[in-house]
Amino acid sequence: MNCPVDWPEPIVRVQSLSESEVPVIPDRYIKPPLERPTAAKQTDASDVNIPIIDLQRLDGDDHDLRATILGQISEACRKWGFFQILNHGVNPQLLDRAREVWREFFHLPMEIKHVYANSPKTYEGYGSRLGVEKGAILDWSDYYYLHYLPLSLKDCNKWPALPADCREVLDEYGRELVKLCGRLMKLLSINLGLEEDVLQNAFGGQNIGACLRVNFYPKCPQPDLALGLSSHSDPGGMTLLLPDHQVPGLQVRREDEWITVKPAPHAFIVNIGDQIQVISNAIYKSVEHRVIVNAAKERVSLAFFYNPKSDIPIEPVKELLAPDKPALYAPMTFDEYRLFIRMRGPRGKSQVDSLKSR
Image 1 (cartoon, helix red, strand yellow):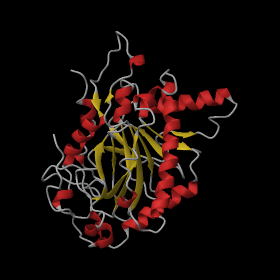
Image 2 (cartoon, one colour):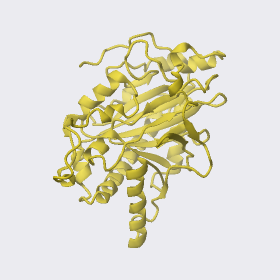
Image 3 (spheres, rainbow, N blue to C red):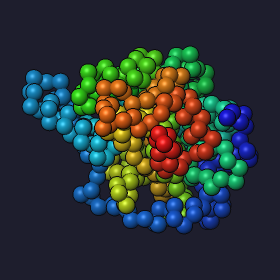
Image 4 (cartoon, rainbow, N blue to C red):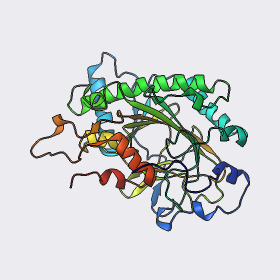
């Protein structure tokens, strides 16, 4: 299975469609009735949200408080697959500037952005579709994808040169989030009853992958017919999302309903990816989520993916297995799994579920 070197059809920038003020979206963006935002129950109630966990006193002297915070994280990983973290140690000013740098990029003239146009071979650069299936129904979004780790893939020349401080801001942002993800991996490992470095070692130790996808969701004249990002679980290890601070859009599946996430100021939204579900033998769950769009407002969000080394087999860690708890998944490298995903595009939880040992 080889990834094509080019897209199956000419690329249309969703932002250009939006700015042309078409009153009706093209058929290519109209979801089948059962996949539309209004097809299933949605919960926007102000008192319903994913867990919000304050990390401020996690490393203090109060052992009871540390145990409480660890317990909150454990429950969120097992029951939700999603949670928000406050007081995580990343400078709020950096978060604001990172988000704003990308908003400015997406509002640059198209000829400047097009210099960074991507292909399905690596997805790196400025893009407008996920998956290479000809005639597929597309999402109402553009994006920019780039690598941080391994360093052999990091190429700052593929990062936008404008705005002027973009590369500097991105570099600092990447360094800070790699550190934060490493810290969270220790907590997830401890909560499985393992030594703190077991999950990290299953990822390849320090030889991990890290990349960023910046999502731009333009205004959509028919938001009830489209999605900014189709329902999916994240294929990688762990995702830290910096959401738009003004416009909600992320929805998380909870049993038979979709819960609209209310972002807390300067929080990251953490979600478990398919690889951690596999390594934990499904004790931790990756969870379906999607993005709805808005008729009146655009949105920008930054999804940072912390992934295993791409060429080592990912499988349940031995310490979690027993005669009555056999491995649920056969080994597969992240490279193999990622190619599998890229060929097909977002498809709910069907991707990771199809890996279960028969």
